[in-house]
Length: 338
Length: 264
Image 1 (spheres, each protein chain N blue to C red):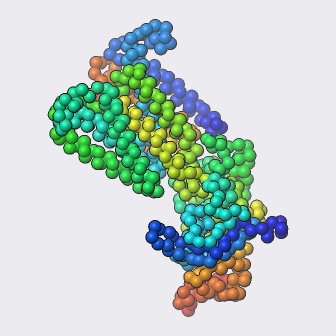
Image 2: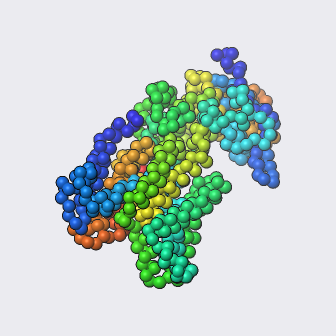
């Protein structure tokens, strides 16, 4: 890990920032809780209901969502050799939207009794997972036939368009109330996850993370292009499959539990490349995990509008905060790193 | 060394190259018999579209043979596993690398991938080989530069260093001199000649620089419409093989100077 040593200072700063953002995130909210109380509660010295059952799960969710989306964005950008790729290029979020749309909006089309029973937290999670999984299966099935990685990218986008069209048709036949519920899902939400749900989320996240770590060497080789990678003995098809599955596990679960969160997956890898000025995935991956978590915690802290009872849609905040940062970085450096 | 020179490294036996699809075969060239030895620099020349790239792609297992055999280090090429092949054969392609955000050192280090562990950590031995490759290609001072800062000529040297770091006994280069000015064309081919002498590797490259190749190569493979001939450049000149390379209406091969002249 000699490469990491030369970036030690940057990593230490990121870790310190992560801890600071985590503590700030937990201390903010509609009810003010003293610093002592927070620290005691985090170390299990006292039981604070709000922290243990609301703020801590939400902060952990933010960390998982931010880092997971960052990783899957990085995987897709390298695999598709395209700086515009993000975690959702394979149609994962549109697949999830379709699943959720069928559950929420389906009532208008398929009749009432069917849905009133179904709309619970878990049914939305399952519908989103199923939806993204099915779209992904379709993309994977095609990708084993098509050898060209760029074609897979386009096919993923096409599947996205098809599902988006079906969602539009479904919304046309839906009531205002259902539409509102669907739109609220689309805003994204980091809260409301129970410890049980968080456990499921974390297990799948861990699996995706492990697969990404295993792919680091392949990702670095892919920086040369597929033909060079092949000449270096890399099994392209196997590596591509692992990378695609890792992305879908990460982005799929995140979308299922927190909604389609925009921007983070596309932007975090770019910010890290600009700041660390490297394309070595051994550096990028840990840096993206840290920065993704930090940015998501900051966005969440802003979204819950400190000292107010309102919570803004997290999806709007991520773009409002993140887009100017990326523009500023690109203008300042005048060169896109890839 | 002389004993080793006789040993053939890359050899084809009645090789037929071309494209296979479900219903049909397109044969591009057949009965190709070449025999490349250790410590030889071999130039592959031929007109555009004659099948130079197809031959190189077939020799590097990128595409399948239509008939005949390719033998690399006494093994049938089709039986060599990808990782094993990567330790025997390295490539310099015409295509651009995807990310030029890598430093020269990082890029050359990727040549060690077939030897490194699951996460690609470099050992002391790997680093020595990388440094050595940078030295042999005279780019040690570029070590920490980013690839996007380099000129075409410098980048080509880096790609050759990467192939050297792969530590194979055969290196195949597809048109390494395109996009380079006259000086750098000669420089790159001269560098290849030096590497062959210093390392005893077998280096095969395709090129349109026929006159340079005649001066520098130990052996040349000439692809014409009718046949594929391989021999020493002087023998090829005597046999008049170069006259068959192109249609005779515009240019003709001058045997005295070893280069082509425009018909007046």
